[in-house]
Length: 369
View 1 (cartoon, helix red, strand yellow):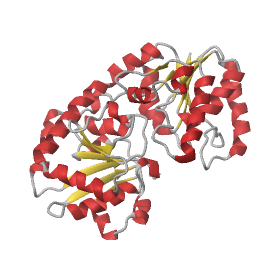
View 2: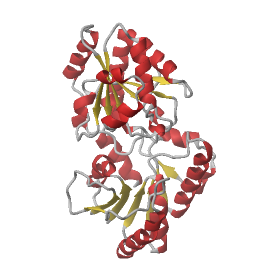
View 3: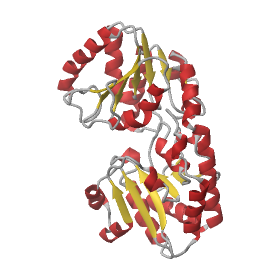
View 4: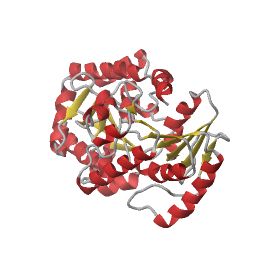
């Protein structure tokens, strides 16, 4: 049996479900989340609401002990199964308990090295966690070959061989989600029509490392830069109240559509011509792949991880890390004014995303999992 342990309902619906469906063995998923995933199956089990083994600044450490006992009982019953542990800060305690319980196959699937592009003491804490997770595991998988290139010769890569499903990502993107040629051409026609607004997208969470509220600052600067054309921004994953709280000019709210939750982000991505992700760090940046598959040009910082998908001047515009909101916005406006250049980015983003089609990625993943 193959058993996966993860944090977050979105992780289950988007990443783990296709991974489990690709297995020839019986699979199960245990996950920690305050809200249930949308996928219904007797083999997908949400931990109790009190359960918590994730290290974060707001973790209730008093729950660690009962949660570890809960896990230990699971591992004792499944010590001969292959156990796969997802994500850096969630995996440390489960990997420790699994080793103590005698689980023989312990796969650490880190979804990117969290220490890369981190700063300050957080960088060293995450590095130490990665080190422990690798040491506690019997095999390691990551999601971006660029992370492995960056860490070449580092102690993290010397402890154990680290594998990656080439050309990158966790489980790719299903072919049914690709924007059709006809819809892409319609979107391009709308972009060329000066009477139509330019629609941009951002997908993230309300934390600084995911580019919030920086995205609001960038967009407000962009509105100042592009007064000759109406520009709108779709923000997915953040509720309206947080946007209202963090925006500088309340009048600019008229140009922002907030989608705090959606089970089908493709409905929104097919409307936009570009996806903006001013993250400080990413493992792979799956939202960029989703944007690209829907014919969106990509604007993001020059961080490690997503650069196995993003190619500056080909499907993306890579912004030097350290650029402020005004400089970021100027780069976007300069690109959008070059209509032929923008259309080229859109088409090539859609084309390059096909390298990450789900069946191809899962085939590679099954060779190493």
